[in-house]
Amino acid sequence: MKILTIDDSTTMRRIIINTLNRIGYKDVVQAENGKEGLQRLDEGGVELIITDWNMPEMDGLEFVKKVKTTAHASIPILMVTTNAAKEDIVEALKAGVNNYVVKPFTPETLKEKIELLING
Image (cartoon, rainbow, N blue to C red; front, side):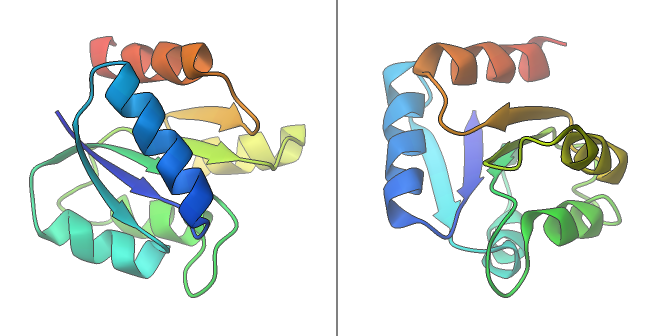
């Protein structure tokens, strides 16, 4: 399964990729903002998106709204962010996010959320 992870923090991308590798997901592509994320999506093959909310150029919410208007609209999206307020979670879900993880997170939490998304 090819996973796209988008975060402006190189460190956070590395943490997510290392966690994904440890739980068995080796095919991971990355981007540092929503704009770059859209380019990676257009390269094809992505089956799951993990995105941050707060990023320069195009933030996660704008990215999600954009994805939902493209041929990639059916790809599940997991938002991993520091935005923990209930209103933020509701706003993200309304925009089309399929699940939500608040940073910091454990590898178990990430694995659980991914499995929920891919196994229905």
